[in-house]
Amino acid sequence: MVLDIQIITEARVMKANIKNKNIVFIIAVKKDGQLKPEYEIGIESWRRWCKKNDVELFLLEDPILPMEDMHIIWQRYFLFDIYDANGIESNQTLMVDADTIVHPDCPNFFNETEDKYCLVHDDGSYDWVLRGMEHYSKYVYDGEWFDYWKYGNSGFQIVNNSHREFFQYMRDFYFENITQINTIQQSYGIGTDQTPLNFNLTLQNIDVKLLPYKYNMGCMLKKEILGNDMLHTKLGWVMHFNGIPDKDKAVPYWMEKTFRHLYG
Amino acid sequence: MVAVNHKTSTFKNSDYARYAKLAWKFWCRRNKVDLIVVDTHNDKYTFPIWNKLDVCDVGKGYDKIAIVDSDTMIHWDAPNPFDMIDTGLYGVQDNANLRWLNDSVENYGGEFFPDFKLDLEKYVNAGVVYLDNNSLSIYEKLREFYFENQEKLDNWNKGGGREQTLFNYLLQINNYDVKLLPPIWNMFAMHKKDMFSHNFQDGDDKTPHFIKYSWVWHYTGFPIEQRTTLMRKTWQEYGVRYTNYNGSESDESKY
Image 1 (cartoon, rainbow over the protein chains, first blue to last red):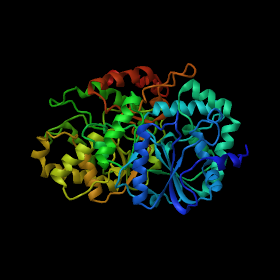
Image 2: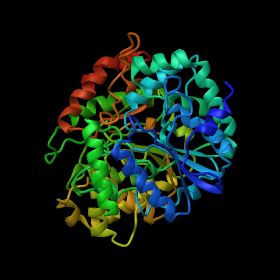
Image 3: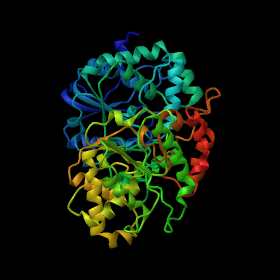
Image 4: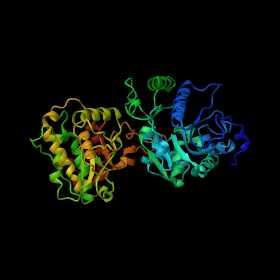
């Protein structure tokens, strides 16, 4: 699919005319005119971290395409088109989920990427990971497979300009396989872009570097660090509030509590 | 493998170790690897776990050695991990329970190594370790450390396990070449990782993930009462696979 650049130009963005900077990119699309309060909290932590580390924060507040046509999570692979349409020249970009809080003392992870495509391994539930891999392997990838211990969480991705072509591939892949993707998503509940991202990275021979868990601390309950002693704030840098039961209540609770603990 | 019944153990080792020995024995025979099981406690140690340290003597004549706990089983078709070992010590990073890990490192580190910061990214599970002959000396160092601190260690009541964290401290302090392996070579905390589950959404294949997607199963990280049951179930379901190449060895009562 050729992207309608007009649509992108109309997308409302927070920043423009950024040159040669590292960028933190967060999808912050409002629902019914409002962003979830916990996402505001997560974004505020990133805003402060970016200021401290001379990094630009970029919020995508409106979808590029109607969300009925493309799940908003998939729309992050329009990243470079958005940049081009807005005169942004990025160095590296972290695409991070809004349900994360960054520690104020988090080191500048852009210095650890070796200019590779960076993810953090997702070992929260290998059942979820492996079921997803089996379904996609069977229904989309004609039996292809890869090492599941190299499977990364898509909620924290660091990319650079060398990955433009791959992002185009991701979008093409989406539209070419939209029926199967939607069927798998709806039938099996195994997420949106994460498993295809990992398959495509492998099959397209993208050089991936897995960063340590401390940069994307998922499934903190399973790691037994999410508790009132706030141990999760002491063991890493980017706390990802996923894999938490009763998430409508628990995620706002823990994100607010964590933010107050870290930022006062 | 140390597989000792001992009065200090809450659960009888042989109840579950029998399945570990069966699996490893068949795999070792198939792959022409010597299996050495230490089943007699040396009274110089107070707790049986420390018998493991004598591998520095037992393993001396071997090029490559694997030290495996008696709560592990190896897949009947597992490839030979010694083929991927060059120099150094190979293990699987242990970050399944970061609270336990943090407590263990704080407790043991605070007591014995207050000035050394352990790199948790290189912290390995000590229940399955593969190494070359030169790296065997780590167990000698740990044994020396044990006897220098025997009273403290034998009366240790701060939690954080027995030998694993000390093992990691000594590895890093002495600059051993630690190489990380993928989890398939020591699949611990299987319940946390949901490896006992299977793809219930597709077809009739009820094979659990740990059977399909890992080579060495480590039955730890869950209530220890479940260990024997889970190992027995594994053997009951899949033991026949080990006997395909030598049916006469199927009699587990030999152990």
